[in-house]
Image (tube, rainbow, N blue to C red; front, side, top):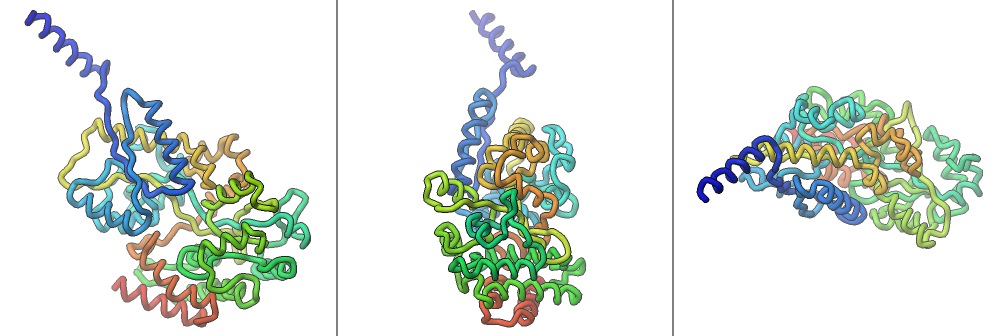
Length: 426
């Protein structure tokens, strides 16, 4: 009997050693995704777990978005209690690296699961780097876009035969279009004009279209030659409000409601509101036909603010990841990218090039219409002061938003913003 037991044990060990039987790896996952994003991610996790039922199981936890999430990541990683993998805004990579919260992900490891610089748009891939090292893998590209009411644009003669807006490129042409729409709507344009989010994204887009430099190589915010470009961007935004085209002091939710109620012909917001429009239209609650396109080219060339949800591995101090765990985490990151078409239904553009270039995505509307943003994206400055819920966002609320609403001159707004950020950096 003893011999039979010994033979059985040796056989089990042999099977384990050649991979005949694998121990199941549990992957602890943290994200900050709520609303439609949260619903879609939960579905992807369930699908992954079903397909990997015998080998890997994602154990997900959703935490509060923004500063609370990133603070918890930093404090947890410092004592070795962070997750195995997490969602992460690429704009936060510089701060995550400086604080020691992120582990480097080697290009060799990523290549082993079919990921690398050749499978992502160049700017998107580089946004996950710090000093040339990879710390995060892109999952999507989310940017601001221009939503439009097709009925109102058709009445104003601004809709082409293909159902897309016409004559919007150029700051003067865009203003002329707003003037045509002004009479048929409470507002020609709705956007958040109070706070930090949309004002930053619009400003950085208009600034990028002029090749403005936000942070110089020497650490100077708004180098002298870029100040006039920044002022021009703010003047353009302020003109929308002072001209009566867009409402003053409007919070995010109010700006969305102005468009969905039919009170505004245009709406500038992130791609993440596409599900809102889609769901309302499906319920018959929108009351008009809508569409969405990339932000017009107001100045020298196309450029639009963008960020990415990505995947990162925390630098769990004193808790080295086993080769088996690392393999499981890499499989999670790879699988999510290769199955990101479902994620695109939240309005996002897939970061993974084969998915973005697939026929299935090319027929997904309105995403495919604005997918050019993958090639024209300008990601946040690589600074520990920049990124989601950062001092840069605070500075926008303190200076650019007041300038939009006529409470501060654009020139003064940029000069004060420059001084504020420079003081924090020095």
